[in-house]
Image (cartoon, rainbow, N blue to C red; front, side, top):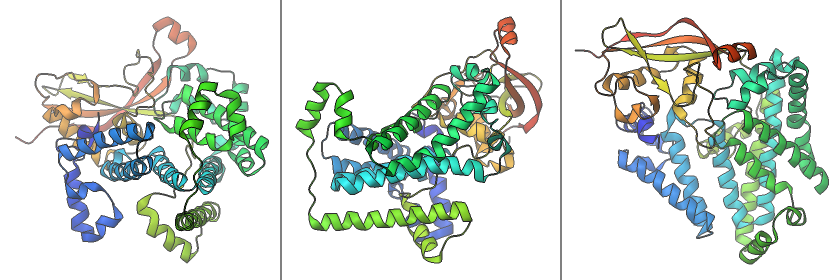
Length: 446
């Protein structure tokens, strides 16, 4: 739904320009550094075909039709889109989906190694998410005030985030402490006997549910919750699943008894993944990595099957937002609306997970830096001057539907939630104050 506007021939970052740049700088070495099917073609049709093929393969996987083949091609296609998407596909949940998808392929080949590799992934995901918060030296995590800012400054809040932000200070402080306990202590319970594993699972599920209700993080929370399934066993699941579901599963699922050569191959992959993951953990805490580990990490890095994680290591305490405007005469300006990110102060935050409006997300990151640090932004403005249908379709509203504006510019505003009194008096969810120019007015060359 977004691909052509982001990386299509008339999108913000055309895929053909990316592949040309890689070829000119890396030559044939770029094929391994950026493994993707799009080396065979970068047309709009090729992009759409990859997306539709992924959809079809997903349906085949759901209905257990050629599951291993479907998993392999799903991984290959998503890896291709990960690289082709450039700035718009580099999120941690994209990496998590690639790694989880690859491990699920191993799970389909050998059950026990697959289960333990998925548990190892869940451990690294949760533990690193907590560790980076303390290792960063960020004062808001150290003094337990992080959630006093988080619900207001997160990228795309849900309507419930406004209410969460206005909870008593003591509740927010206790919630910050609970987050650190769940992320730092509970991951170790993954490797303990079943009942302690269940404690870890319920802790993770509770944390992800709260995050899901108060923030739009695409499929990240749902995927993390799905990974928690490997912490339970059949006996526990039978107690909560309807009898019809358990009968269906017992009918269709069989214990996998792989051939020896398959077991050896999965075992070799397992050793590689665990060793690389341990080396990455060591590097996070010490800043050092051995030469063999660094070599191995670099060699397999293009496959994205072992990744580092850690969200909100440093909490943002303010919410800068970019407001894009267009004008016909350079004097009277009209504001472009986005589908989900804060803009109109009267607009209530919206739900959008598991969908991810990737342009809206990049606008949040762009506002934390400068226009020169976000090279894609000038191309985005150029597409607005051209009134590119693929790009304007990514927006919530286009004030120039019939002909493009003569000028566009971007302003920087500071946003905060309205107080309960302000909201009751005005109905506004946000209060904003102009901070300055983010990108000066530009026009297309005559």
